Image (cartoon, rainbow, N blue to C red):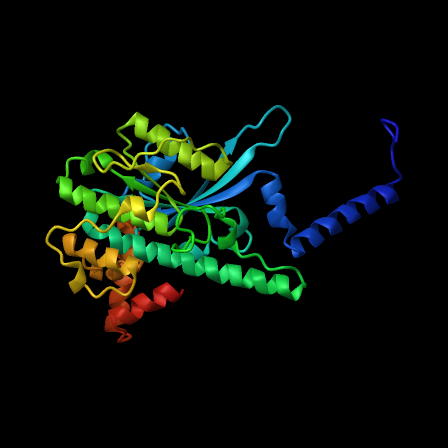
Length: 362
């Protein structure tokens, strides 16, 4: 065709109709996900300890010079990276879950069949609060894993219905020579565990630091995850954290630095550790044989909780209704809500528990 060639209106309409039909066809066959990967679109889901510094770390990784604000339930933003002249930019869809474990049900929003092929998860744990660390980690990872398995199962059923080979996500993560491959349980998608507020953690008692470090090393290796400690007060640590983040968000090299010394900030890319290097749980006053653990992970949990008894989750259950969470306070709206609650209790005879459940359903 020569430059400047024009087409009759009827032919142009036909071309557009064919293009539209092709797009719909690809979307119906799951092509939208493949197209996202081709165009450099990825999804990163951040979750972790309440007030653990998730937003501050994300802003630093995106080079955004703006004050961080409390995350309202689940928030979305995006990052872009130029790849070259006249080349589409890489795009990272970034979801951040607020409220610690209290809003874990919201994982179903960022973890979908459309995002799962290009999804990564970042778990940010507050090192300054070790008594809440295991409970937060366990609940959030379980919620994310349950949702991943659910959407993966749905995708496999859809592929089977179309007579296409099923894709098992976990099998894509590990090379054949991955350390302890037969002994670990890889997370279904790439996972990065960040220990935040290292500036506070570094002054902890040496033995307690060893317990936290060895436990997180075990958990990270068990899930085939990367592990890094950081602090927004350290440019060096933020720079290393940014390289791990950019690896997940844009596919960049995460560097080759490895640090397993518990007296220093941990920097352990996935596949750089092993159970033989980690050793057994760090115990001083704990008799391992008396713990009656069901498996290695349960043993590490019991030892950790002996050293750091986990906080009561009663407060978390209480804050399941975000309207009662102080960080989302709106005085005028809250006053009107209180008046309405009193009306329902006094006039209609509803109990406060029934009102709360009704609001959550709505």
